[in-house]
Length: 324
Image (cartoon, rainbow, N blue to C red):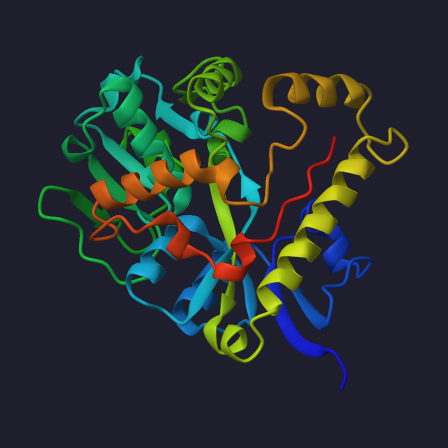
């Protein structure tokens, strides 16, 4: 018998590059790789379960798990990002400190996206932000139909509305965004970051909490796991190997177009250790616990599931390899 043929939808990152170019192959599996942007991938998996294996928004997965959808995660987290850098506000909106966001009109791409869940939770935990006081305006349809709790004001912008333009023109006050807000990226003086020096704030957050926020996980369809349970371990090993190759490429100055790449690597290792992207449960327990709590308190999931239950059981017994 030949290898099992599966589709994998994922982002095109340094951590996944060896899977995409075929230099890493999951044992026993022949992959058809489908690189695509996150919004499209998440929508297609949440709405139609199109792919055998998929990189998926972590908050979307928690919603799917609560709904008993037909896929399960493995402890792979190929995308993480600190979130303090991605809070933007309109100059002149009276927002100088995080608590000034209370009662304001705040833009989101969608309410359920992981970036927003993390940011709202961090603001509430660390800065006294009252999530229920804000007026939330979303750009896109949610990946999973959802009715906000009665204490929360969430509405879609009018058809043809553009969140970035609405902030610049004074219709909205701030944005919690997955990426850099376009107007800010263009240098528009009418928009600023909430935190003037976000890297310092993010380093302090990591030192206090040990959390490097998880954005995405990897899920496998249940019909695949039922027939071929070994696929969970095979995919986990392949993602780990791809990550280790990315680390080795990053450390080679001939393969990285950054003049001081070694300084950046040493700075990151000093702050975060040799492997800031661990693919295992225990090193991620604090981050997963926080995101589960945030998802529950923000009305996205009805209860807080046990962390171990989120992942294919045999993938949790596979010992991780750490790069030193």
